[in-house]
Length: 431
Image (cartoon, rainbow, N blue to C red):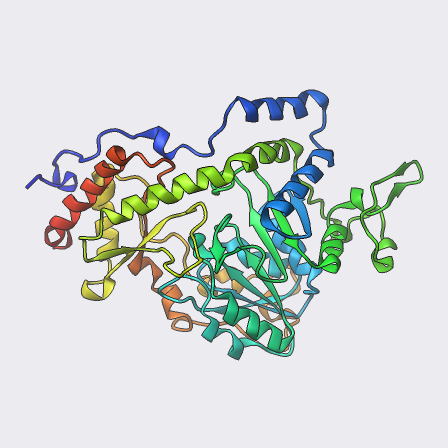
C-alpha cells in the first residue's frame, strides 16, 4: 500500500488542476462589459443595475429586485424593511456565516439563535417556535451550502405567529425546493453575489420580494437616488409610492448608501446568461465525485435527495463524517491527511456556533454601558454551551470537499483516489 504523504510518502494528486477550480468563469464578454462601464464613467449610476435587477427578478420569478453593494447590506435593508428595530428579536440559525446575523445588531435588535438539523445543516424547524416572543419580528433561514431549508414547516410557524421570513439564499443561487427556487419561498430574500459564490459578479448582493411595501422600504433605506428629489436642482428617478416614505425623499434613512457598483451589475448581466448552464455542469461534477466515494462507509455527501429539490451551484460543497464511531478530533486528522495528498479545500466546517461568540453576548455596539443583546430587549435570549448541540459539534462531523467546476471524470478520479488512499489507512492516521 502506498505510504501516506502525511508520513513522508508521495502525494496522490500532483497537479493543482487550476482550471477545474477557477471561478468565476470570465470571458472577453465580461471584460468588454466592464470596460464599457469604465470608459463611459457609469460606475456610480443605476441604469445598468436596474437592467440587471429586472433580469434577475425574471430569472428568479419575483416582482421586485434591488441591487446592493454586498449581501450583508442587503440583509440589513431587508430587516429594516420588515420593521426590525431596537429591542426586537430575530431568530437565526447558530451555525452560519456571521453576515446572516450581525446586521440584526445594527438595528439595536437581538438574535435568538436556533439549532440546525444535523442531516441538512439548515435551521431546525422544531427549534423555532419555542423561541418566539412578544417582540419576535423575523425568522432568518439559511439554505446552507445549497441545501434548501424545510420551508413548509417554517412558513407555517411564521404564518401562525404573523412573523416575516427572510431567506438568506447566498449559498443557494439556483437551488430548488420542491420545484420552486430558493429566494422565492419567504417574504423577502437576499443573495450575496461576491466572488466566491456560485453566482459571482464581484462584490455585490441583491434583495428579492413580491411585497411592494418591503421593496419600497428597503429602497428608502440606502438608495437616495431612487426616492425623489435630491435637491432643488436635481430630480432623481422616484420609485417610491408610499407617502410616508416620500416625506424623506433624497435622504437615505439611517445614512446608508447601498447601491451596487455598475461594473458588478454589468458583469452580472453576462454571468446570468450562462449561470444555469454552468450550474448544471457543477451539479454533474459534484454528483459524479460523490458517486465514486459510495464505498467509503465513514463519509457521505451533504446533498438533498428530496424530489424536486436541488443543490443549485453547489456553493461550499460539504461531506459528513461518522464522528460517533471515532474519537473527538478524528476529522481534523483526516482532513490533514487529505490535504497532504493534494486535495484542496479540505477542512472541518469553517462556520462555528454563533450563539457562543462574544460579539453576540458581550458587544456594546452603541457604547451605552451594557451589551447590545440586552440593551433594549424585554428578555435575555443569550445562550450558553449546550443550547444548540448540533451547531456546536459541527466541526466534528462536517468537512469541506473540492468544488469541481467541470465534470472531467479523469481529473475528478485523481481526487477520488486520494480519498480511497486515506480512508484505507484510517487506523494509522488516527493512532
